[in-house]
Figure 1 (tube, rainbow, N blue to C red):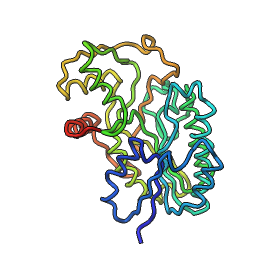
Figure 2: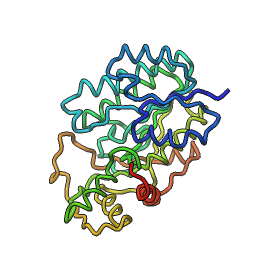
Figure 3: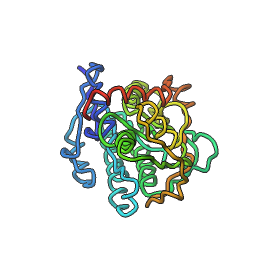
Length: 291
């Protein structure tokens, strides 16, 4: 009988990408859980739902992800990203079920000077990053068989994201002004979805808890990313670099949050494609869909 894999965040970018490939993994029977099924801000409801729902493994994609809004909704962010994650981890522990917890490069402060390793010191600069770090610690503490999977700058053919915004703005505006001093790597959610199912198979590497990073290979600023989107899509909209100080936001972003993929490649045997190649694939699909 196929193992039951419960996936939270069914309607998010990553959740929809996982649904898109689920049929390719007949060894699993997927149960996708959306916001309408469970309110993650209600810890008691979370505990009840996961106590009564059967599963053999859990991929926790759902999160409070509104980076700027979190600054004024910190209690809600910590309840969803911290308390709910702890409750989910406890439910996994009761079933001896592996848990994959999707986290973020924003747990780092961007001052490391080189790519952040999985066990580099965390020092979040904003509420969102801090709440996700709280979630990381909670899941590792409450379920022995847990893998924290940090990622960065996620986009997809589904939902709202940077790629879709740039495609729209590139057609509407005479020029774009994009920050060039925030550095990391874009991640195509379709590639992350495949990686999560590959990581699920490698239980022996996180039976006592572990952290790994996944993004597409390479390095980029938001300016580099936007410029490449315009180039690949053939939109003749100039992209001009600006400093973060010229585009103030409620939440402070780390300037250098690039994730090291060394452990992903060496220990887990997963080798992501370059972010420019991943972008090509995403744009090709967007040309033929209305997502």
